[in-house]
Length: 169
Image 1: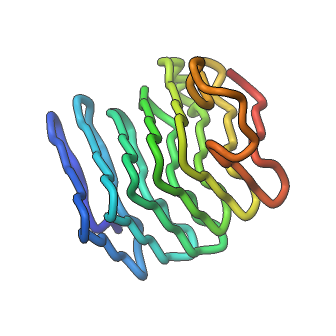
Image 2: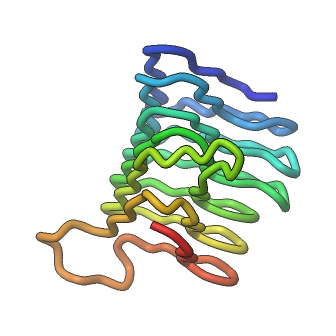
Image 3: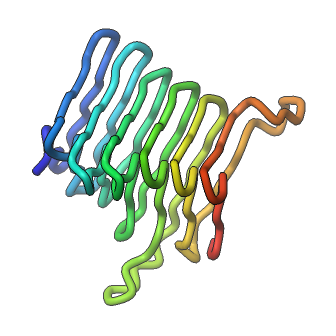
């Protein structure tokens, strides 16, 4: 169960003061291509089911511009993607999960190999187990901007076991 389901050619923008609270479910399900989810400054997606997804995208683009994604379940994911191409852009904001902050994989049955990209320019990604788990073989993880000075704090990616676990891509 999800608080919001996005379909073809849809855009959802959460602006300041918008709180999507799903204490016994997941937050946003994106089941079609050509979709955009904007999580702007002062907004938050909260998902509380034990195996909740803050955002579960099949396709599309997720822009976190100062907003937050919080999942509190022990088997939860901030953002979870295993099928089609998704692009994630974090320009400040936070992802906090009691399990994995961002999970990228490919479905072993369908073997979708479409490219995926995660751009984390600033902000925080935290998972109690992994901050980012990147298993997809055709994906790119970009951290910071090439014009910025190297920093150990901006962006901040951390996890209990690993901040970044990258077995593919």
